[in-house]
Length: 281
Image 1 (spheres, rainbow, N blue to C red):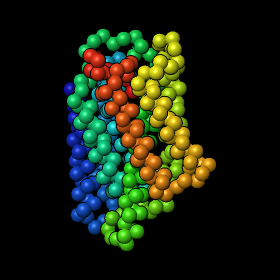
Image 2 (image 1 turned 90 degrees about the vertical axis):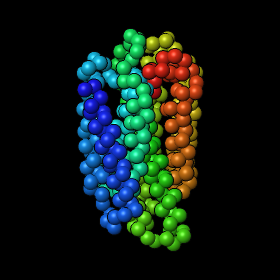
Image 3 (image 1 turned 45 degrees about the vertical axis):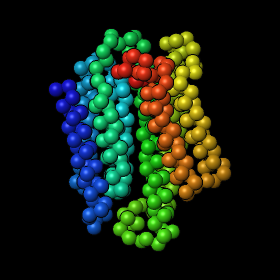
């Protein structure tokens, strides 16, 4: 029962991915309602799964690798669904649904249960505050990267004068650049709040705001990279392909900080040194 809704969500996201990707290559339309409805069904089941774990465990399900990857996927789909309601686009669905599916499948390789008694630090209200801000930033940067990838592909089609089906269903360059520009300060805002709340939590838990934990260090590096993007956008006026490329570079850094650092390095945020089920964002 514990993972029934989680499994339903995975199946829905997977079916949605297949429908969206198939649609791009086979359909002549510009909208993909079935892919979107399966995505919404998955999001609903996913929401119930998260609520169920919250009730069953008696605390916010955000402390394990399973929880973090699951919530990350939920946020990506939630943002995508919100955008689809305003401006449906199957290309975005063909990227968001597979990303959510992969994150969910990765989550399923970890236990949703903590094998040891939960430590008092994880019962703090800082847990949902810090993790929610950090993962919200990651999800916005993921959408930015999707827009960046679509921008580069659309520009490639235009320069090669391949004005065919993909060119028609992709948003215009201006729309993609606007999406990238508007998402950047939002993601940066959440990332900043995630780092600040993490520092406050660390001070409360360990008596120091900053411990140069590998995750803290790489989060700070990520913050500087996105701060540079904000500066280049607002002060220098970068836009178009440069901004799209930076969105992809930033996303690669986000994913490394989120998953790679926890896998490869030790520290408070790692499960590499024994406690494999713990995976603080």
